[in-house]
Amino acid sequence: MRGPGAGTLGLAVAGVALGAALVELGLRLFAPPDPAPGLRRLHEARPDRPWLYGLRPGARSRHSRSIPVEYAVNADGFRDLPRAPVKPAGTLRVLVLGDSVTFGFGVERAEAFPAQLEARLAGAEVLNLGVGGYNPYTEAALLADRGLAYQPDLVLVQFSVNDLNDPTLHFDAHTQQRLGEIPAAAFPDPGHRLPRPPPPASELCRRIRVCGLLDDARVWLFRRRAGVREASFAPRLELPPGPERRWLAGLYGEMDRAAAGAGAAFAVLAFPHRPQIAGDVSDRLQRDVAGIGEDGGWPTLNLVPAFRAAAPAAPEPLFLDLWHPNAAGHRVAAEAIRRELAARGLVPGPAGLPLRQAQRLQQRLAAR
Image (cartoon, rainbow, N blue to C red; front, side, top):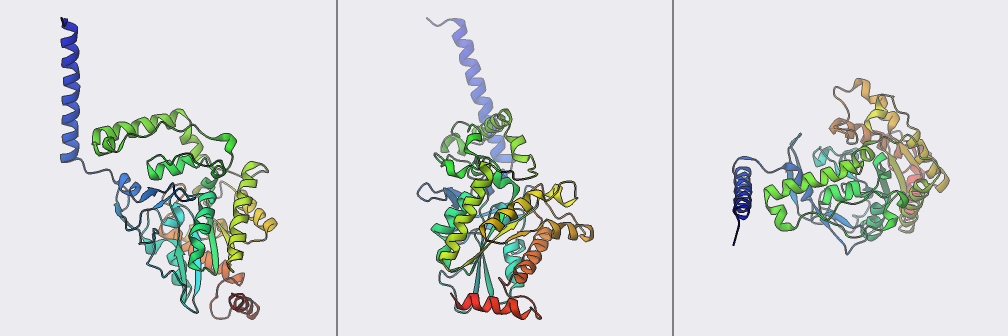
């Protein structure tokens, strides 16, 4: 025989279920879909590939939470123009690897610095292989597995301060799904891995707006408790000797050797973060990264001075947030990269390029 308590419990459960159903109906009828999942739908897990995840070929999304930007992924799985797998004869082909800065978060494809660089290099192709959340581990894996097939003459990899974070901060945030066991080699310091949240809700839950909101809240609370927010946004001032420095040097060295084996040059692009532009934070970190390149034998382009020089005259800030340049910032980066690469004889410069540099470029291309 059921007591009065059972009836009360049943009514409470029914009430909660009815309330959830009404909230779900209201969300579907009156609340527009959250634009952030639209950005996340661009990505897919690839447990079959060493780079773990990438952009879904043919995916399209419009991210309008703050700035209306359209993201479109080509058939090869990159936010770029369609590119022939075989390099056209007589073309200088530049490959750019990186994270959401290279991808062009918050700006249109043509505004991102790889496209801006291509516009400044007559007769050259600059391929954008940037994927949001990538770090040097996934960049090196993508270069070896897919990038070299494009027959590049020059490989550029973009460095950001958050490359030194626990990668699950970025891998999970972009894919919103379990990537399986992430290799220890993907962590700058495997001894400081943050605990991962329990697996996200099932696909059925993600289709239910109320369940999806509750799961987002659960993940957010977990990350707050784990100190993830503080770890994600804490600025790094330098790269002292230790696991992170060895990790970065090892992966950049791996990319340099892979590029050289394919007859390509290699260089690192050290991007600033916003506090460095006002001069409140030094560029010691970028200079430390450049020191790794000096030891390893590849050039590093420190872009902090170029951003600092451009900021006072810029009609608007050069950053959308802590990490990501806006369209004006991407233009500053593209011009500084073109200028520095030309000074090193790695790309053609403007009329009047010193003969020695032009000869070095021609010799390098002829040797390939």
